[in-house]
Length: 297
Image (cartoon, rainbow, N blue to C red; front, side, top):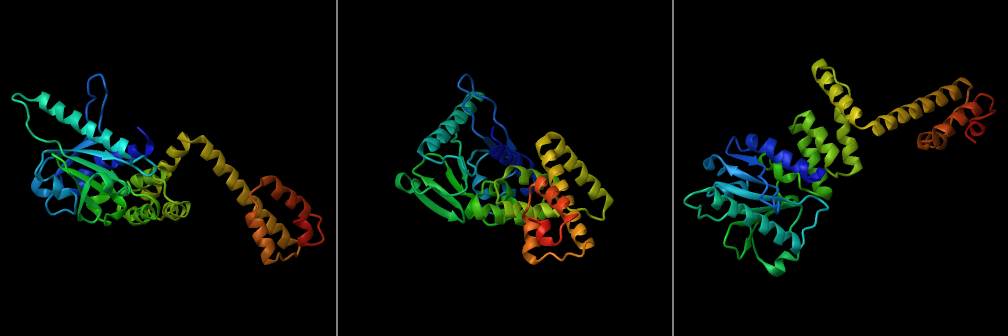
């Protein structure tokens, strides 16, 4: 299980009961004998009447007790081969349900494919009906087949599980919108797994600056320490970045003590330097230089 679809499945499992007020729940399917043909998961409908008032696609599950869900994250293939594999995994789950009951279950297992967008090739092989923003019925089909284009979905709390499949600018918009609406642990997982732009990630990381509430600060520090413990390379990078920041500050203080006033161009030069050896060399030169220009030569 990849990190991207793993995060999406985790979000479905954790968020679905709350956003549907207990009307639906996410379950991981058991492995099928021998072939190990597994769907990403399925939604078991616990209380159909609770899904009706929610934004699409939730009401489409009201007439069923279970829905197979296939999740395609940013970068995943959404070609004809993947479509056929998804329908195969749906069929396997349907057969499994038939074998579980006596007399056999005679229903048709629905299939929802969640992806960032609707691929253009799908129009050439299937009849598509858009019934809500980002929600398409795929036909002809003997079972309920929906394609859910996450990039087109509205930003709604009950749609958070589907919105994790967004990509590009739509993903950035979702990340900025959802960050203040979820707890800090979930937001950190989102920052770790979802491929949002560096600018958006940096902006959201600022939310974790030190705060006055000691309880919140303690929880944030614990999370950061846990992350660093599992990623020593990040810890080393942060140490080096701290040394670079300190060297820049020392250089500016030394230039000021010697009566040198760096120009705007020199300030930019200092900020742009990310090599610790170079900053140390400038510090040594600044001790004896006759000007700021000589110090940064």
